[in-house]
Image (cartoon, rainbow, N blue to C red; front, side):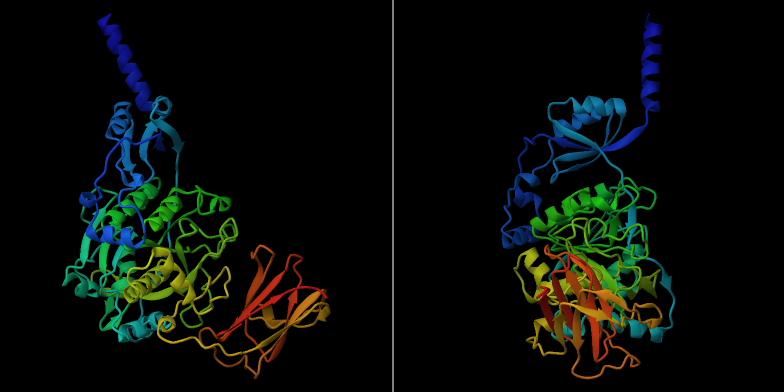
Length: 543
């Protein structure tokens, strides 16, 4: 009998080993734990929470009950991470084990998860020193960021957490010598290996970091060279199922360590998620990103590089979250959306991206080199450096107040569209009073026949004739030659919105002295336009 019993146990064990294992978030029904914020939080986290009116002893910060985790482990589940904010554990388990776990009275739910990571960068290109210098200057002057440096505003005292795939050579690259020499990399952590050392992995993080606070010789590559930094590895290329849990873990760590800004150049889209799920609430990272903002952290995320993907014409996650400042990419010389930058809005037609910055930059590469890089991965860090300067200028504000200030400083504000958001933030917004002068006139014509629309996007600039019911007549005070070279932001922007303020059409034009815009969409209710600092809004009503 003993022999038969041993065989039975062996067969059961073998069957269990053969069962396919999946990943789950196991949410608990309650906590039953205690918490001391003054021993858990860095003093800067305490200060940030007080500024944001966030309770120091909130139940979402209490640790997960260890007894619950022990039960999961004893049930043959592998516990990867226990999240305080979600009161949940990320586990690996087979079907038999997860069925058993669902029966525990302390378990609220167990949801299967998968994900696919997309790093929001495209490619690099070597340039000679002169071209690198010109581009490095341009990525800053597009935001008029040089004004911050002239005023001594360099992100000093602001604590920034960077989530990325690795930071090799940050401990020796000359771009960060000024940061290392003052010991302003306060902490690093590799969540993929559960180790503190983060100077390894994908060099993507090296480049994004340089566009926040790095230098190229005497030139700034980012606007926050004097900030403090926390570096977190949250991604590895082969672990496509775990990145979201590591992003969650890093957010809780950044909160504990006193981060005021999280910079993330990462996105979670297909094949795990569908465009309809990009509503700012569906994915775990979007939920946690919103929680981080609720705890006083400004979260800045790349919009993504799906602009050329006709199967994914929507913002990704966590850039889809309401409280996340999502950043699109523009051509550094025209200020227009760069082709690869993802379009908004969210699945619920909410505005995204919020703002934009150069999608082509100079960034650190290798042990001591620099390259031209492309992707919204590098737009977001530029805005992160900008945000650090705003925080230094206006200490003690709430996270969403900084969010609003950055949007309001953008060059198109209050105009917006789903390609540029409110445009590129401008440092001079914080130093000079904006004086609006009329640069064009617009008149609504209820019924007419349109003969010609001049659009830089219209193929071959062909004229076409069609019947429409309404149109807008635009007149500029002087001729603007279409053959002259255009400076950044010289274009004519317009959009048409429905009664819910959702855009049904938008375009960017090379304006001539007089031109006409057709209003053919049946739901068109509002027309808005922006040209050289002047904004206009018309209500479209047939007489």
